[in-house]
Image (cartoon, rainbow, N blue to C red; front, side, top):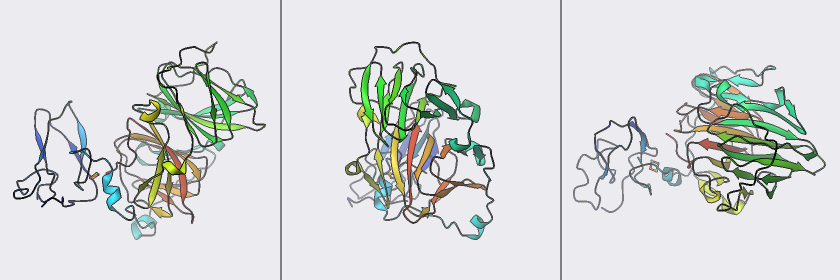
Length: 352
Ligand code: FES
């Protein structure tokens, strides 16, 4: 009577009506999931009351009843499963899904505004020792975030700013010195770096080779700005800005794992960056309530939406609109390593 019953291993997406109070079933025994129908009688459980705080609120009510943030899903359902729910890529239905060819266009469009972008095929603009292009942005249908791909040759880059937006960098090749509003940091390979709104940054590449990095600006920006000078407005209340790859920080998620890179621990409140491993498998089609940019670091695979798919290889970036149904498949033996930037959101393990 003190153990909740798992109603299901994923949350319930619900559009809430204003002025209504909801009673979420915490015991899992009710027949009106995710809501209470009185079945908790005789158990230690009581329903949890929730009244919408804003108009048009959309929530994910926990279905597994093991959440630590009742009544909402916090991803705990993944810990109750040995294997992340998967789908058979060779089912009759999936075999009928056509492949979108990349041709020479860097952007392979899938359903619902989702696409895969290959910076290797893109025309890059130049600014000082930098070459760059837009990967995700309003011109491609993004509503919340934008992402730019950069290559930095030897030397000091121009000063870069995205105005008052929060900026999250990911170093995908090489190692650089990053100066944020006068404070310098070492950005190692595969580290995430947080730059607060209104701060200015620059890159010093003395590695002897080309350094590649991606910059996400949230909310979205049309293009980078090139201020004449470095500002001196570094937010000292948040001195740590670089999060290196660290296997000891991995969190399990069924048979997958991820490590948070840029998140609240470095002061980023609404943009979250993580690095995660996907084993050889095709995920069960699902959705998220956040917009996501997913960089493929290692491995090969295929990105699927309702009735289209396209191959993905290292360097590609997947743009995933909010609520778009999708499934990412890793096709090589040791799986894929990916880096995600979610916005607005703080928990990459929540899906529905
Ligand atoms: S469904 Fe319970 S935590 Fe996600």
